[in-house]
Amino acid sequence: MLSLLPYKTKIALLTLIPLIIAIAIISIITIKQTSKLTEKQADSFESELLASKKAELKNYMELAYTAIKGIYENPHLKKEQAQREIYKILKNMEFGKDGYFFVYDYNGVNIAHPRKPTLEGKNLFNFTDDNGKLLIQELIKKAKQGGGYTRYLWDKPSAGKSVEKLSYSIGLDKWQWMLGTGLYLDDIESGVANIKSKAQLTSNRTVLFAAIIGIVATLLTALIGFLINLSESKLATQKMRDLTNKTVNFQEDERKRVSRELHDGINQLLVSVSYKLDTINTKLPSTNDIKIPHTILDTVHKNISDASNILNSTMQEVRRISRDLRPSLLDDLGLNAALESLTNDFSERTGIDVLFSNNCKTKRLPQNIEIAFYRIVQEALTNIEKHALSAKQVTLKIEKARKRVTLSISNDGVGFDKSTLDQTNPDRGLGLRNMRDRTELLEGHMDVNSSPEKGTTVTVSIPL
Image (cartoon, rainbow, N blue to C red; front, side):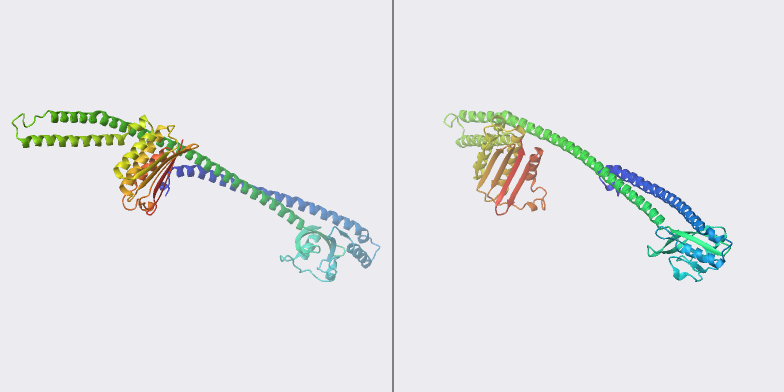
């Protein structure tokens, strides 16, 4: 699968994949470290707050015992009277929003409960909380052991639901009573939840920042890769264009050389042969001067005349080929004169009128543009002669505007459907492709509009 990918894509993947993997690994490690740190912070927070709660409960219990100690340890008071006075004191002793004291005997019978007086007198020895814990038995057990802490679920009046509670209980062994008080731990839970929530938020932000950094880094890498590819592509395109220019210039130079050889070499030899034939023809004796049969002499004159005519046609063809290869007018007088000669020859040969206009004929264009325009017009006229049936007029315009020069050539003959150019014969449309290649070589734009009913218009625009 990877072998099918372009080389540039492989390079991009080789750059991006390790980057993405590295960012993902860093994000995962960060999340795990944050989670571990959060757990430690939460445990530390819970332990510290729980220790603080325990110390607070012990202080409250010491205050309560101090408040009842004089009555509980007074040997002169009767037991029932002392218990009633302590009952009244404990019923009215509260702290905080939900703090109070409660009393059970060692059999589990509730003696005093300021917040739930309906429980007084009931045996709750086997009472369990929402988790199934025998909390009264646990409280009594810790009281008998000299005092201790018990965690359980209990209704919180201000919250209207069961929450975790920590109680501290001591024993009043002389009466077989258990005295207890408690603090709700929902603030610890909310604190721990808040720490975890903040940690989760921090973790989410870390992941988000990592994702943003990853996306930005990926985009920057992709952008840099794109710019490098674009630069390399432009450089390759420019090198290809330069190479093609050199090839075209070489071809034009070779055309010029062959054209010059045809005109100055072969054509001059043919002219010499023509003069020789004319000389021979004029110096042949008449039938009255020598005894040669009249028919033979006439045949010789006729053959010389025919040879002279063929030779003249050959010279005309050589001149035409030489002009088509590289018209001397293009080098000597410029594009305007060369196109006028080309269109005049075309009109004489085909009988099709050519309307030629040029708004920049007073100043010559760059040589490469003149050569390109001449070859494009030459190709277009050849196509019109071959394919534009019933054409009666050709319009050729050259217009210079600002920093561009535009060539348009149109005819009123039978056009064609551009979509069918390459469907049946690969050689069809070759002329148009050559014209387009010459245009693109100069970083120009070529547009062809044609239809079977409206003829054909070719427009070429090249920057100066």
